[in-house]
Length: 185
Image 1: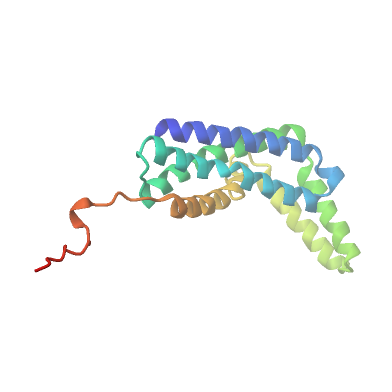
Image 2: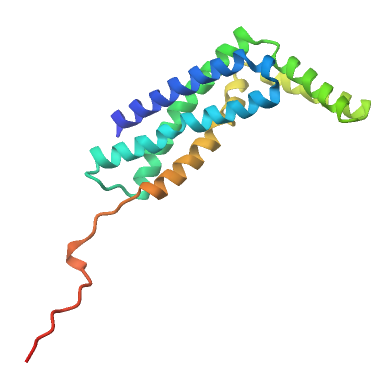
């Protein structure tokens, strides 16, 4: 299991990291709403490695068979490796390449709220909420934990679906339910 998990987890991790770097470099140009949509699309595409990893394990290690539990374990571990790559990449991006991300996003939200006719009190409240969040997010110990909230649920959902689709149990030949042959008199 180790080889399959490492292989597909790292392929997913390279995909998610590379695509995230491409996305964040264009976030301001395309707008935060579109960047968020692209970001979650990147996450889903990268977690397709979960499906392929489970299938590879079933075919190469399980001789064409895999239980739901084993499939889920393989998928969850691939999700973990891919998510760790996502978090490590985000740490580099946030603390080195985009240290003003939360402030820029807060300003974007304030402008969006103004355009939608929100009251100044509502806008000020949102800006304060974002300042509080930034204070927490700037903590290098809490940032990774908060960042894991983005990819892990998506990866586990794809793991669940893939495990259900790919499970294949061996048939026990001693319990066949074929009817007994009829005797002709």
